Structures are given as C-alpha cells and as structure tokens.
Length: 281
Image (cartoon, rainbow, N blue to C red; front, side, top):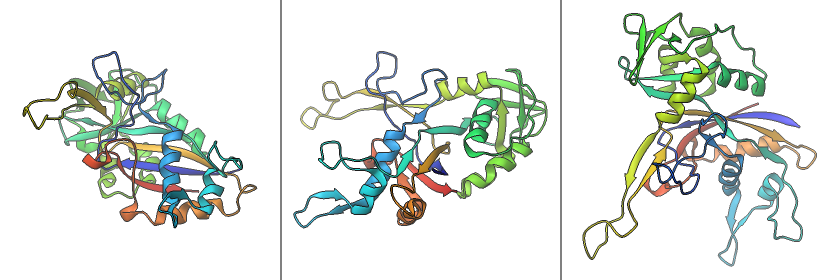
C-alpha cells in the first residue's frame, strides 16, 4: 500500500449532514462520537471523488469510466463487483477558524489534532507544552496585551505558535492560508473540542409557498455548517496490486478540477461545500 495525504480547505461553509436530530439543531453535521469534532466520512469523500470519473454513455446514462472502476470499484449490485484500488479515510479537522477580538479570526488546533496528523503523515511533531484550558500558544496578529480573545474567552499566551505553523503551512496553497503563521493558536484539547462543537455556524433555512407568500408547512429548519477556512485532512491508500499507477491516476483526475475546487456535502446549488483540494505523497 502506498500512502497519500489529501487536504481540503473550505472556501465556503460545509454541510455533510448527520440526518434529522432531536436536539436544538434540526440538521447537524457529522461528528466524531467521542470528541464531537466535525468530520467528513470516508464514504462521502470517496463518492465525491468517484464522480470525477463519470462519463455519459451513448444511451445518455451516466456511468463510471473503466479507470474509475479500477480506482473505486464496481457497484454492489453488479455481478462483477470488486473493491477499488483507492482506499479513502475520513477527513479530520486540523485547523478550525474562530472569531478573534484582534486579527478578525484565528485558526485553532490542539495537541490531539496535531498528534493524529503527525501519526497519519509520518511527520515529526515539535515539542509542545502541556496547556491548561486558560493557556495557549499564539501568533502575533491575534495577540491583545499578551492574551487571545476567542469568542467570549480570554486566554493567556504562553509562547508563540511558530513551530506548529511551520509544520502546517505547506499543507495548503490557498491565498487565505498564507496568514497562518500570524493567526495560529494552539489550545488545550478541551478548548479545541469546545470550539469545534459550539462555534460552527447555524443558519435558518426556509422555503416560501408561492401561493401564500409565507413559509411552507414544515419548510423551516435550522442547519449546522462547518465554517469556511476550516482545514481538513484525509489519508488515502493506493493498492498498486489492484491497479497500477493509482497515485498518478488520482492526481490526473484532480488536475481536471476547475481552480482545484471540489464540492463536498449537500447544498451545492446554494454555494456550500466548495473546498480547495491538494494531494501530497
């Protein structure tokens, strides 16, 4: 197996739904059960990637191309069903944007997210201090008299986040990501979990009845969205025994994307889920 790393930088809010909810939010996003941190399931990501290899047959039906079948496998209802050569893992949050009293917003991360990334990518993680919930490492542009103010929390800086920023900076070439060294804040695991759980966007969605001019029956609901400027990463494995040059085929497919943008999750027609995507060996 050959391993690759894929990064997804949200240009617009992302909604990969978890279905209906009995909580305050009608349509929440999918999250890890134990941390409540948002994820993009591997099944969702694989489905979006597989669609890049769709082609229209002579009968007008859309089917997966021969190369797409090698990469992503055959349908389960096909007599020749078989697993594909590309294995796609779930996408995890590595840096999450939060409102800041200075510098407009900050990207936050934590020891757990960084250790997971270092383990998955084989990177060497810089030494990190054990941070309490009221302490952080921070970039210069979000510091205010030695503190960082994120949402309603005032957190004391105990050093800069330069070494962590150096590790994460090469993961995305989006122009907005250029500000990472000045805006990165390393928090405790608990505070990172709190913000990832509580600082997602919640928007009200409605559909107007054309006859009455008011909201249609049952068409008012609240929807949760992971904010734009969130950085996800996913680990992919290429089984070269099943299909040769799998890594090259994936790169060639992604090179055909307009502006390197992949749409993930629901509500594409209203601009949700557009992400800059990059692959690293």
